[in-house]
Length: 435
Image 1 (cartoon, rainbow, N blue to C red):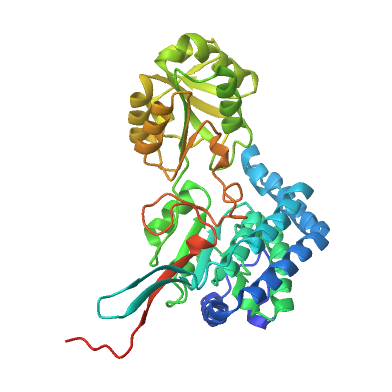
Image 2 (cartoon, rainbow, N blue to C red):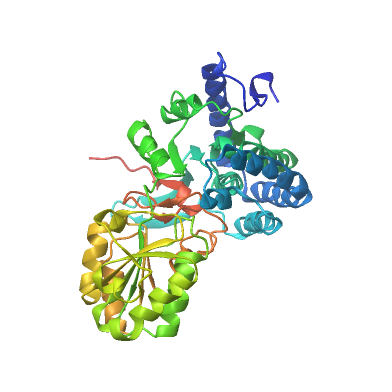
């Protein structure tokens, strides 16, 4: 690796040549993107297979690096339990990374697929065909597994990627990145196809947001609200992003109570720090007598703080009063806001006013109510009788995800390999000229 790409120690001050370093990363990534765009599926899959092996064979080294990151985060005294959970790798999570790479390897290569074809009256044939985006910049915090997910998805879709992980996961990302580079090397692909920014210097983020002199085609932020807000404000290139996941579970009057309890508990408490966690429970007024108290007590007994409206507070003395801010808050913790609403229309209205267009679920035995909810809730992911924690590319069969996009342009929902493509038109003629 070139001297300019040598990893910078975490405590190093801003280096005077950071701009030159980042410009060099962009130039190398752009050159690698041209190679990847033409790489055959077999070559990309050889790289992915080698990466999967490398993750497994280097699991001990990855876990050791992660242990150092976690210890440093704990020593800072500022890390919340949910943050530590996002940062921590376990043997099962490392194995999950490897399995995810295998799934990505097994999905159909999206590049070169003709999505539409038609013939014009003059005899010309027009095809719309998938092509890579180019160079993807991924800026993420705490979750080291994002390095693997983003790297392999970009490779599968023919894109080069520049990864800028959080300073808290610096060592973990470096260990994972070494495995990815090993796979590229074994398959004869350029190592710059998956680049990890080798410094914790925050100025590198601003340089990526500027586009690195046209080298970066799209930015994907994965992190907290402040990071995503900064990216959306400062980026000079397109952004795939969600600002926050204020996700709802609505329990309809027709819902089976046992099912509702299972879904609500999983949606909130399986992992409280992920973007697919439920943050608000909405209960149909018609279900208050049968379901409200059991649902609230279940959450409280599971260690979840409940902040409710007047009706919810009456069910249990442990419920705290909800303020107006609670309906708009992504807690990422064992806290949930709870409210009684007037049927599916009341739930939809509340979500429209307070949701973040991420993920919302209805628990209902009434197909008409479910159909109305799924049609009218304007979120990237809407579910019927299933937990919001399924808001995950792996659970969608994508193998992994580079993020959840909540905008309305290009990609929406889990961003997998197919969503990291654009298209171009190929026109086949037989000598036609335009009159």
